[in-house]
Length: 216
Image 1 (cartoon, rainbow, N blue to C red):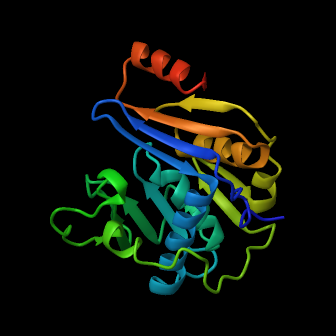
Image 2 (tube, one colour; image 1 turned 180 degrees about the vertical axis):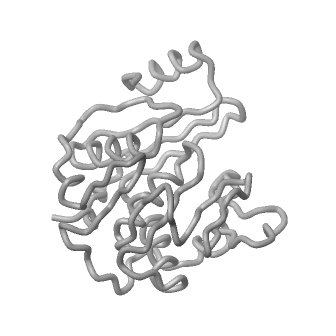
């Protein structure tokens, strides 16, 4: 069994993002996350025409876009990798040297850059207009590689075998490999992730209480 149908299309919160320095809060239900995944997958498969096995590096910091791009990459049969990638997704630092270079402004609501980033495709300009239902996508095979991060490789079947979790977890400064597994566990078990950045320990304690979440 692969990860294509991973996201539960329910109205319950699946990913909640806080930037405690700016006050930004974004809540994605399963339905909303699924819509963003569809848009992003359509961009990858229709506009970029990625092939199965295309290696995609997600080089953005903890943010609500990371879960979107993780699941979209898997749906498009890409391998989420941290080296030897074909496609690189950068944050506003515009750090990427892959043949295909994408960039996320990390502005609220997935907004585009104020000025188009030279040498990069602004995902805030090209992803939101995509259809929010999947177009033609061949599902991955269970033995297809899904992750190749920090020297550890996992197939779709191996990730799908992650133990389910019903917990609402507050996470911060997670590495991408750990976040990927926590996301899969939450999707499989009805749990959710609260991703918080730029907060003190006191801020995080208050947020955990407010969101009824367990700090990890």
